Length: 359
Image (cartoon, rainbow, N blue to C red; front, side, top):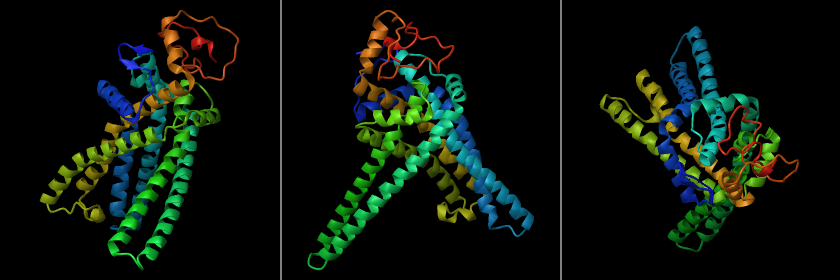
C-alpha cells in the first residue's frame, strides 16, 4: 500500500480503534499547530460565553431600566459571538480538511496559514455547506428522538401490562432493557442519518466541488460508517468532558472553600470572577479536543475513498510512476486532490493535473 515515510501512514481500511489511534498520534505530533488552528473560533466563543454569563447574571438583579437595556444588548452580543464562534469553528474544521488530507497523503506541513487560506478561498461555500449540515443534523436529531419516544412509549405500556402478573424486579428489568434498546436504536438512526453529510467539508475543499455537489458526493461516500462515526463521537465527547472536569473541579473546590455554592443551578448567586472563570472553561476544553475531531474526520474521509474507490492504488501509482499525460477522459471517480482549490500550490508528487488523469 501507499505510504508516507514521514508519517508512517499506511493507506489501508481502518477500523474504529485504528481510526482513533491514528488521530491521537497525529494530534500529538502537531499539537501546537493544531491548537493555533482551533484557537481563534474558540476565543470568539469564549468571549461570547463571558458576555452572556455577565448579562444573564445581572439581568434579573438590576432595578434600572437603562441598565436592563444595557444587559439585554450585552446578552445579544454575547449570544451572537457564542453562536458565531461555533459556526466559525465548523468553517475552520472544513478549511483544515484539505491541509490535513494533503499532509496524510503527501506529507505537506500542517500550517495555520494554509488552513485559513483555504477557509478564505471557499468561505461562502463553506458557510452554505455548514448551514446545510446543521439543518440536516437538526432533522436527524428530530427523527431519532421521535423514534426513541415511540419505542419508550411501547416499552412503558408493555411494562405496565407485565407488572400486573410479574414480580416487580422483572418489570423493572423489562423497563431498563427497553430503555437501553430505545436509546441504541435512536443513536444508530441519528448517526446513520448524520453520517450522510459527514464528508461535505472534505469533498468541498479536497475535491473542489460545489455545495450541493459536495452534499451528493458525501451521501454516496458514506456507506457503512455508522460504527466508526459513533466511536469517534463518543471518544471525543468523553475526552472533552474529562478535560472539562479536570479544569472545573479545581475551580469548584476553590469556590467551595471560599463559601461559593458551585452548583450550576445557583449560578445567579456566583460572584462575577467565578461566573467568568466557569464560562471560559468549557471553550478551553473544546480547544484541546477539536483538533482530534478534525483529524478523525479527515482520516475517515480518506478511508472511505480507499474502501470504495481504490484510493490507495491511485496514490501508490502517483508516487511510484512518472507524471501522467493530460488526457481528455472522464471518470466517475473524484481526483485525489483537486487542482482548482490549490492554485499556486506545488504537488510534491510531481504530477501535473489530476493523479492518474482522473477528473
